[in-house]
Length: 220
Image 1 (tube, helix red, strand yellow):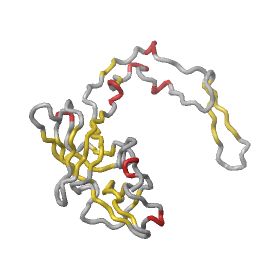
Image 2 (cartoon, rainbow, N blue to C red; image 1 turned 30 degrees about the vertical axis):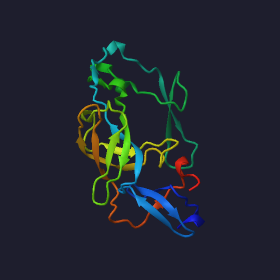
Image 3 (cartoon, rainbow, N blue to C red; image 1 turned 45 degrees about the vertical axis):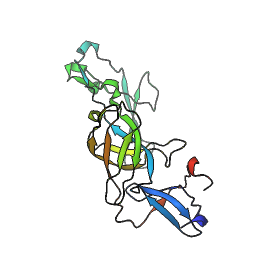
Image 4 (tube, rainbow, N blue to C red; image 1 turned 120 degrees about the vertical axis):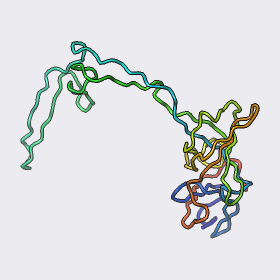
């Protein structure tokens, strides 16, 4: 497909696994695609790494300090013609439709087990860099924009996704690959990552074009 289907230069191209390249030339009923492995291809990406902070374990609450739920009333609705009856539980002091915690699963009740609380919500840390193609049969690499980034914070197998942004070649969070190797560089330069792509570029059949044209490609 091509211009007749709304395809334009610069639009991202994917297969079922992930990003494979971008449209570089468009005709009425077909289009040419530059693969992500091409040396002329570059894309802003994010490396998703897990926080290494350690959770804090709190002791169980004493039984007398555990919150309680008062007066649970059960009523049976028999107005239905079905042979199956439905039971509605009404809790005094609470609004219907809201989520409540039964007393038997309240944290710390009855001297139960310890509670593990994640520190800083264990949020993922995202390092931003530039993915560059290196030719057919060679893994693409990611170079970091921030020289303060250290390879020790990045693990082999960490996911690589598109970073997005007004000047990016693709919307954010499109899967690209995983880190296969971390190469530290001397001096103030950040590490270089080798990437295993999730898409097999040697076997492409059915492709999808996202109808998203980056600002940098407008007018081409």
